Image 1 (cartoon, helix red, strand yellow):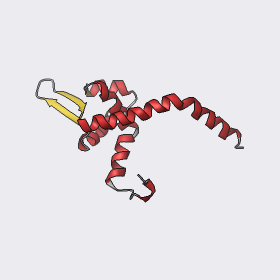
Image 2 (cartoon, helix red, strand yellow):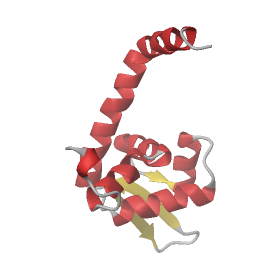
Image 3 (spheres, rainbow, N blue to C red):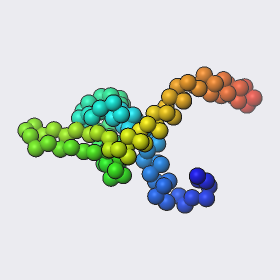
Image 4 (cartoon, helix red, strand yellow):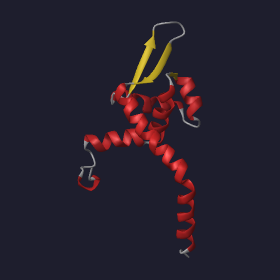
Amino acid sequence: MNMAGIDAMCPERLLMEHVTSRWGTLVLIALLDRAHRFSELRREIGVVSEKMLAQTLRTLERDGLVHRDAKPVIPPRVDYSLTVLGHEAAEQVRGLARWTERRMAAVERAREAYDATRP
């Protein structure tokens, strides 16, 4: 895919932004193993505001990547899980996350070499 020739507002670019956003990536990876309630997901992800997590989940649900299952019980129970499409996206994102873990030392060396050549 040639991103230089793609309109900034095209659907593919917007979807890529949703999937690779800071919170989108973490939500997709967290949901790979199992469904989570909102509070569980927030704890697993870490420092994310309730508002930002809710917005990210709505966006991913709208894109067809996350399924929201609201159960009519008291107190209300809502579970979030991946759709088939979401599982595909999450596997790709997890692959990138694993690559960053494996290659971080090389990136740090490159940064140090770059910084050493700058005043």
